[in-house]
Length: 99
Image (cartoon, rainbow, N blue to C red; front, side, top):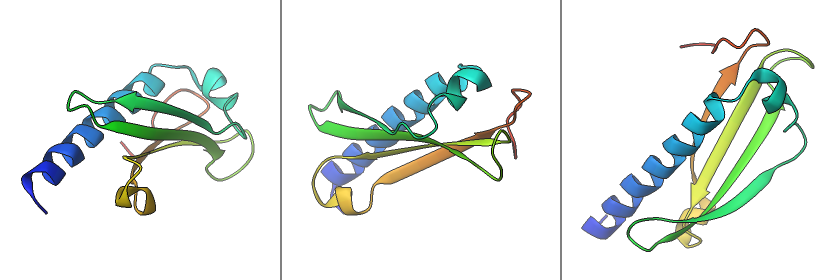
């Protein structure tokens, strides 16, 4: 892995973390509305690299229970086959599970 790959990976992780931080600010009821509605967007990083980001909400264990919010990011190149991913789980009471 060369320096450019490391910089882009660091940038992609930073973008992914910012996105998840924004989603963490939303209440459970709003996040639950994302079930079955995968959302994609394109974000251009400071390096000029264009990233594709996909976010999805799924029931973690049972309907109306904990929600798992998953986000993935890739640069459209080889990384599209192995995107960087991260997630969090939020309970109906708004608390974060496993943290």
